[in-house]
Every structure is written in structure tokens, then in C-alpha cells.
Image 1 (cartoon, rainbow, N blue to C red):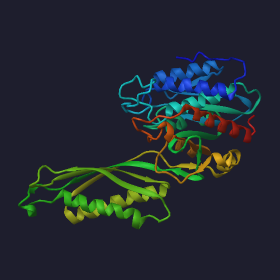
Image 2: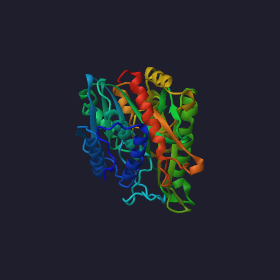
Image 3: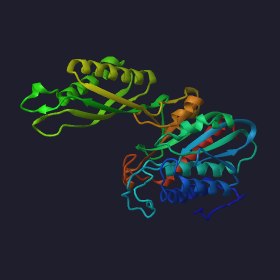
Length: 390
């Protein structure tokens, strides 16, 4: 599965790397694996790194860290995620997924290819001022491989002072670099609510307590959290996307279940939402004589880009290549790295309407033009030069 093209000590230019990344991406696309199960993917990455002269460490199961040592131990890091989604691919590309029910529908095959392309370039550079750490991380989609990697102390072990990462993004034009200063992506959580009411005959509603009526009031009250309890300039979302309840048209509903998500760019705002949900539930319990169970599963913290590193990157890229973006309510476990060290997460635009690359992330039709990956490599090179790594 290793690309036949390998130049060893012969200098590779960016055109060579561009061709190599395309081949790598298509091979990775065929072997999608879910979080902490990226066995074949991990071996592929390790084989490529070995071909280009790297030694590596296997971390947190299927993760891989490769290092290009500099004159000092202090390091900067670049990260790519490795896992795929439980999605049945419906593209008809010749390099379609060979693993039924799994697909690289979020572009992680592209992220790995981009970082491997940067590794190729870096392999030719001698006498780095600082060490460069390349992190191939499992389980971004869940349960959060970045958190495990940070907790195991790998950033400290390799003396990482700053970290950078890319995510392919079909909402901006192919080749544009999407930049956000400060909060970029949201903290997220899953919400499950069970309302235990009292069933009765529909013709005798006074003998029961209608769970659907309680749910209607709960939904309405939850929607007031954002408009009345959160400062208007703060971004936050409360979405109840699923509701199930009732047995028949003529029976007062005895149980209702609601499922949803909450998101915010600020942890304090996120916690306020959770607190208000609990308070609303207590009020409804007292009002209707029901029992309401609330479970909130906290996921990733917000992605917050370091302003000094943002300014550095902003000054290194041609203005025509930049798309200044508003924060988005998506979530990413890159945030765990940023809790430990300063970092910047960026989007790499893949939208190309002429070629039909218009489908959103997580779509069974998601695809992109691999030529765009060289833009990411070029940006990583600029970051290193700006930081006087080489």
C-alpha cells in the first residue's frame, strides 16, 4: 500500500509532494476505520513515515507521533486526526471505501495526507532551530483521542510550546484558508430528558398527567434560555431534535423522551444553559407533579485560537488566500490541545462547484480535490519560517 514513488535523499519539490499526497489520500480513503480501531490506517501512516526516514512512537493504541529534532528540545506540533465515520459511502469514485458502513466523510484522510506531505518536505530540511512534532491522532469523532493524548503527557514529553491543525471545509472556496481569532468552534454536549407523567384514558384527562403537555412547556421554556438568560452578544444553541412519547391517540401520555444538543463558545455560558435546564425541570415537576430526568453528556471544550499565533499566521499568508470567518457551532477535540498549549486551528476550503465538491462534512457524498492539500503544506512551511524553525 506504500506509494512506489520515493526519492530518498533526492530533493522533492512541492509538485512531487502534491502528486504523492494524492496517491496517499486515495489509499487512505479506501481503508476507513473508526475511533481507536485505526489499525490498518496506523500501519499505513507508520510505513510512510519510515520511508521518509522518521522514527515514531505508537501512542494511545493506534496513534502515532513522529519527531524531527531541532537544535533545542522545545517544539511546535502539527496534528492530523485519523478516524472515519459510520457512514455508507455513496460516491462512485474508483477509490471508494472498501469497508462497508464506514467512510472518510469528514476529510480525515485528507488531514493525514496533508501532514504526511509536510513530513516529506520536512525530511529534507537539516539543522532545525526547534523540534517539530507530527501527531497522528485517533478518535476525533469520539470519544476524543486528543484528551487522552494530552492526559498521558505527550505534549509535555515532547516539550510542545504551540500546536497547529487544519480541517477541510466545504463551506468556503477551494484553497482558501479559513481563519478565526479567538473562539472558533463550540463546546458541545448531548442532552437526554425523560418525563415521567401519569397515563389515563383520553376521555378522562383529569385522572392522569399529560406528559405531552409537560414536554410542550419544557420545550418552550428551554427556548427562553438563550433569549433571556444569555448575554445577547454570546453565541449559544439549545436544540431539541428528537421527541418520542405516547401510546395511542386516545390515551393520555405517561412518558415522553426528548433528545438534543447544547453548544456555546464560552464554558461559563455552556454551564449556565445546563443550570437553567435543571431549574426549569424542577419548576415543571412542582407545577405538574411529574418526575423529569435530565442527563447532559459534556463533550469537547470550545476551540479558542491564540491571538498572537493568529496574528503570526495572518501576516504570513497572502490576503487573497484568507477567508476571515465567523465562529461556527461545530465541535472539535483539537480544543484539548489548546487547553494545554497555545494553538491555532484553521479551515482549508474545498468547495468547488464546477467539480461538484459541494457536499457537507459527514455527508455520504463528501469528496474533494486533493490538489488543495498542497495549500496546507505551504501554510505549515510558512508557519515554520515565521517561527524561525528553519
